[in-house]
Image 1: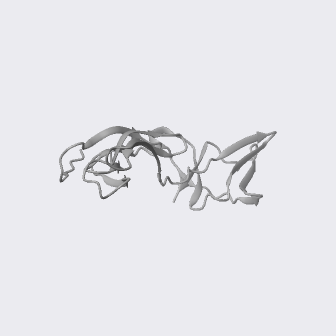
Image 2: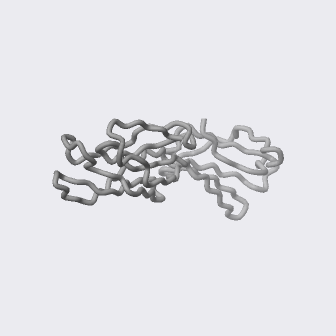
Image 3: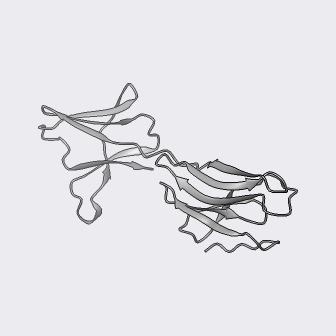
Length: 178
């Protein structure tokens, strides 16, 4: 719940709500004079101001109101509204691209089997991730850090193993952030 108090007491409230790809909740509307967008990272328990926009801060009446909000799959959030440049009202559309600040997506572990050779690859940019293996996924798996050493090929970490060798790892692989 977000409970705000304003000095003038009219035209306030959230008129648009959206959830972004990171699971954050964004709400836009207005306070006394500005289009205000707020964000929650904890399912709406706490909120913080993300953006506040007004055309003319000297106006004593609403100069900007957020009417809607949208998010795309790339993590961008857009506030949409209307505002007045001056009195008497001269309305204009408002579209604000908000800084979502999404963390980079986790790296992807790729596997390929060519003949008897199993290749595991992941980007060298995946700093702070370790390869793990498990022999079972029951009860959450028996994940252990792998002792296999990667070789850098281009911009990829690469591990190749003979899948038919008696010492070949069996089971499942994943990358885990440290």
